[in-house]
Length: 55
Image (cartoon, rainbow, N blue to C red; front, side):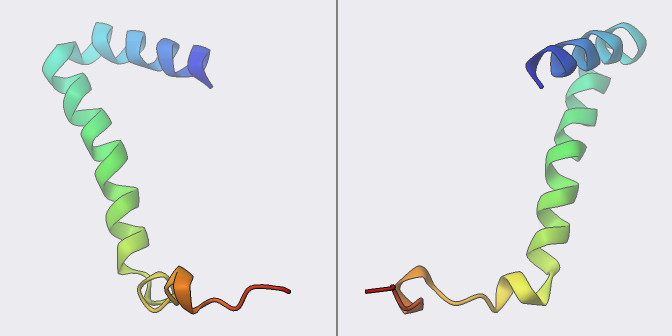
């Protein structure tokens, strides 16, 4: 994944410039985090302390 990320960063820098690349990467991180946070199954997941451990 690292070579692909480097390639993507280079392409974005060339086409969008530094500011546009930072905005694109910020959106790439914020949008999935917001979607996952909004999912009820994630918000209602039990705490790790509440999960029974196998004995």
